[in-house]
Image (cartoon, rainbow, N blue to C red; front, side, top):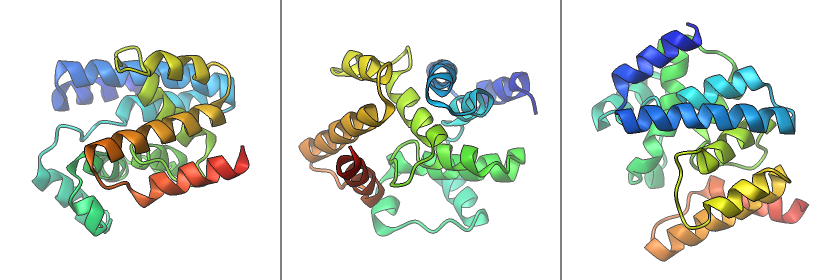
Length: 187
């Protein structure tokens, strides 16, 4: 499939808001990829498709995860906001024939992050935070950081995410903690 076909598919699967968000993330991802040494074409594809299953129902998420042999932890089973990243990666592999592991991991970890992320994974994670449609308290801080240093941006967003989850009394995915700890130890 080419990008026009991907866009048509997204329009059929997503609300106008989520489709626009996907376009914005793809654009941000290309800018970040060029700055930080990731492949801009892969960044565009991963950014465009990162939320392909965001509006899927529980049955579709779990069917994709089962077909892809992805086993959810107890925390993941109880965290519906995480399902789309994992099922989205499965959708790309199973339904779109995308086999590039870097793209698949970028989609899989765009919500939780993880230790040992590639440049592309970091680019998609941050692009999702700073896309033009985003409007949250610290968005301008994150956008400014993203222009200067990818690792510092990852550290800031990790801290921001962990604080937000703590304030809500929510569980924190171990991959998020591992990513933060790795960054903190290496910066």
